[in-house]
Image (tube, rainbow, N blue to C red; front, side):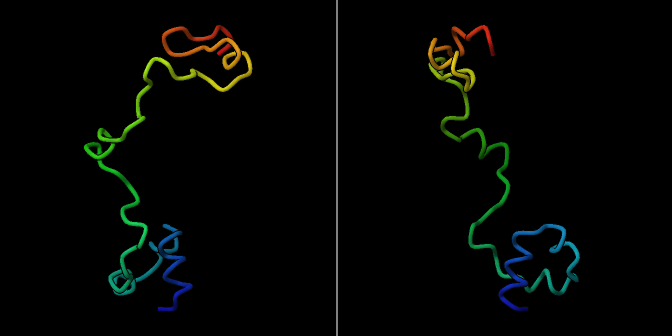
Length: 76
């Protein structure tokens, strides 16, 4: 399989699914690693929850009034 087809198979799930079982088995592992994280892995992600000091939304009002999850701005 050509490098172009390998990369296309890594990036395009529809194309990858169109390959035969033999072609999929011959694909090298994607160098980017796992595409999806398990729930256990996601629970270990730092920054996945609001700390109480983070801005609740990204509008000028919230940023200028320093709205956060403890004191959200009214316009959000």
